[in-house]
Amino acid sequence: MTVVKTIEECRAERAKLGKLALVPTMGALHRGHLSLVEYARQSAPYTAVSIFVNPTQFGPREDFTKYPRPIESDLEKCREMGVHLVFNPSPEEMYPAQLSPIVIDLPQLTEVLEGKHRPGHFKGVCQVVAKLFNILSPQIACFGQKDFQQLRVLTAMVEALDWPIEVVGCETIREPDGLAMSSRNQYLSLDERERALAISRALMLANGEVKEGERRANRVIASMQNVILDVGQLGRIPVSIDYIAAVDPITLKHVDMITGPTVLAIAARVGKTRLIDNIVVTPA
Ligand code: AMP
Image (cartoon, rainbow, N blue to C red; front, side):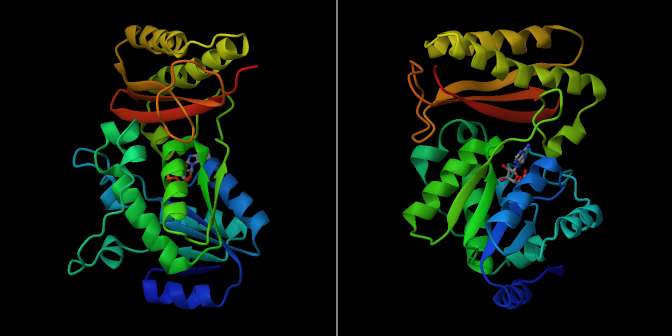
């Protein structure tokens, strides 16, 4: 496995490889990330992972500085998975002060849901992923459905810019009790983790309701709200909802009636930690 920190080295090493599947990450790798790496390995002869905590996708009051950066264990995991190339640049390498920043915006997809609560987040995501695509020229890029809006935005970016890259969405990997794996889960105390379970439970409950025939999105959303607010009332740890939504998977527009595949998405804060999760429900 080759580990490179500069764009120049990365291009040189990439040029030695054939068809490449890329897994962009911010590190602190868990089984969710590794499932993307496994998918990448099976879909192309060469696999690259980028590990870069991208400053431009964090808001001023977000956790950029405290975001975990366990680079040695991340590299070990990549090695064990048979990754060929790891790109681990510094912020200065990616964003030299003299370069003027570029903005790729897909406002119809980025101003809703996460975009509303994290202004500028998707501009940062598009900026870094566009640079990674140009530096690594992958044929395939793997992203998690856990961040379904990100996956949708990046798929649309690739289509809009005619990039010859296949964007793949991989299923969300969960802990045995249902909590979606996330690098941010490590911020949770045991008590907070217990409360965070309300998010996946709310989604599972909603899935059951849709399977049993409920089509009214506001009813399904209300049930999810109740699960989360109930848990928020217990104990001392505040649990608050940023949004709970039922949206079309392609347009990300809110739906009133669940008549086809629909994304149910939750963003909530448990203590100081902001968590997101979603599922796609399909009426029976
Ligand atoms: P991050 O390091 O949080 O930027 O995530 C890197 C990639 O891993 C993104 O495409 C995420 O959607 C994906 N990912 C994060 N958590 C999970 C999970 N629990 N299951 C599957 N993919 C995930």
